[in-house]
Length: 90
Image (cartoon, rainbow, N blue to C red):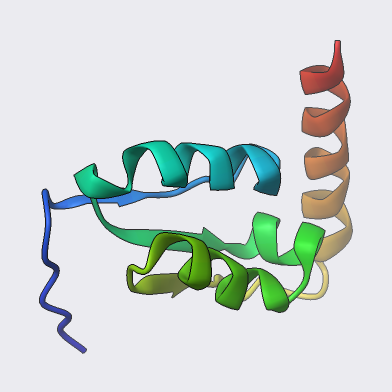
């Protein structure tokens, strides 16, 4: 699928920051973004409603970049996510 992006050509991908921080950045910088990308990490942390929330705040297209993790890999990926969050809190 092809999407024609308006704006500056930057796609904001806030995978490793809190959703509220992402919203703050979007509000301040949306004129520089052409789209917002949501990945697995933010989806797992916030739930599916985060897509509409970011779309409402940004008034930009939201690109969903979901990778299908194998069931076998899911526990390891979630553990890595938890370790990154713990590190970010230090």
